[in-house]
Picture 1 (tube, rainbow, N blue to C red):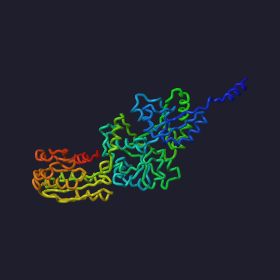
Picture 2 (picture 1 turned 120 degrees about the vertical axis):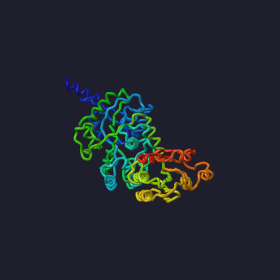
Picture 3 (picture 1 turned 60 degrees about the vertical axis):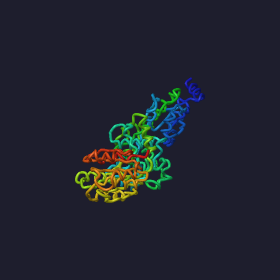
Picture 4 (picture 1 turned 135 degrees about the vertical axis):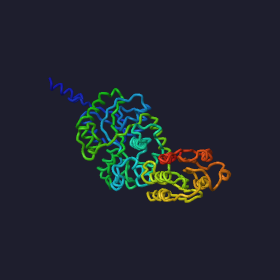
Length: 482
């Protein structure tokens, strides 16, 4: 009788283990295409075949949030983008992990690490002066591209907490984005000679290294100020497929499957006690908080869209005798940072910077278009070496600044009142309307009543500054084009 039962089951297309062939459609992140060998094992062991419909994580999350996804399951690098837009997440099971990292060619990696483990600010500083070019996917559609923006913006905010809308600054992103080339990890082998690095998931960098397609192996950089960690949740969309979903989720979490995922796709297993192989033994470092609202992502993408090519800034700097001691030292320190190790705030590639040193007359004028560190050094030297003189010709300095500014921005830094050169009346007669956005950084000794002649003009924004906060004041006026 038992033999007859077994024979009947076989003839009915069943197995003793209950692995009836089943096919599930899956909306999946693009990078999961590399799971093909693992999914073959899944089908063999469980009878469930997964057919992946791949798409960028951000685009796929949009489809899920708007109800346009018709697949049985979804399998994305993260469901955090969906969580920000949905009142209720589908049933989800984390399946593996991979952090967002920077894969860097050896020579550039050594350059980035010369002072120790690099931060996102170090990456931004190097990119901003043209010393680091990297491939990065479009953050409007790609999870890795948007995760990179989140990492950079969170690190730049320096709050140690999840990013808020008010923390997102376009100019903080701009130095980083100077180095970006618009392509993802899959295109890196064909375009490897164009760039020094690629910003993507750790698993993709390690897969590239193992592909045999690279002329130089990539070193994995984990920015010391934090990484975004992805956990690849498998989500149930069609509740009638719950039994098959459970079978797949259980299999993916099994020790054998986790090892296969690690060895074949270079993603990290969920179990922290499972021995890692190769580069996966490297510690992850600090995981950054993920934003808590969709408004943050909208603000971040809006800032990304505004981060265009670097423009022009003309700085009229007061080098009158009253600027001696702490005030001139503070000014020089601010410029040492902006031209040396300013990270997110450093003057960046392509930016045209004109320095006008003035006292009772124009003392020196120097324009530098940033093309590398040598140009930053030259700009710093103008401010570091110039001497002080008598008198304060504010209107003369502004008049010269407007002659040079074109479609840029003028910044006046002073601690005094006008007592030389062009008069206010002569200036306004020639320029009844200011031709460019103008910022006045008023140092602590400045006479507000005297400077009101300048700051009361239409188109002028005033930034108060003590000697200690001068650097922050200078940073404040270096925003993005609207």
